[in-house]
Image 1 (cartoon, rainbow, N blue to C red):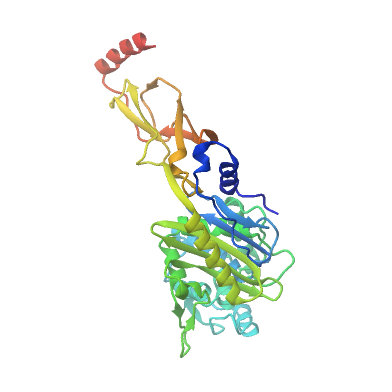
Image 2: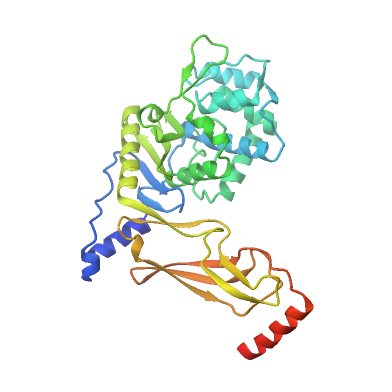
Length: 387
């Protein structure tokens, strides 16, 4: 069972202290009592887990597997090895899989050629097993080889409790994941492929049939802030839902695994999302446009340089605690040009209400070439007196 998430532990710590300032903090209620095998609620910006139960326990992903199937495909497209307009040949295996699982198919014809963009919609919107196999075979030659690619990406993303053996999520003893790993995958999908991710919000898709098939993620209709991600169901896995919502520029991700009904997986997901938006807040500490400090540079074309992080750094905290966050820097001085963007120069310690929270490495935010001869000479004299 996953330990109590860090933000939740901080909330309990703040509530239990006798310091008058903490006593004024508004109490944070316990997370919703979700009746499922496992769940995780994750803040997108920081990656912090806001609430969880059995988050690292092994569960069957069912069709949520297809999120990794599309992640691999989007990565191939990003690197120019695959294109939306390419066409994949539908094998008998892919066609037969659609026939054998009539509730999850795109209705592909054996021997036909289908554009990659259509296969992706068939996977994402209607959860087509036939489309998943056709795409996997086109990319890797076989579904088993494609599964190796899936596992490679899972390892890169830090999915420590995950192993895939197929592209569609059919039951297999060696095909497993965890609620936490799926939240990590959802975060990576949105972060790495923001334009491709938009397909996950499409409500319906039709391919060579009279009536369009509806997206199985009912939250897309129930809550306008929800823009993905994927449902899953088998008798063994139960009803599962990996969802994400964006409200007022803040995004959360919820993974609910093993609910008893499709309706309850939606209800539970909304309860988690509402809880996270209501009782937690984000604090952006650093980023390329938000330096931790501006420092003097010697012997360079610039006299001052910002230090911080190239990527945004955020914390997700129980509401009412953002004003208690402080940042203190430890810099290796003096800074002498030339300096390269991304070059390490020290660290910053984050404290919450006077208690150490985390330490963040600091880097130079832009290149600083060496200055001219006379400028370097003058700064050499300044350095001698200063240090």
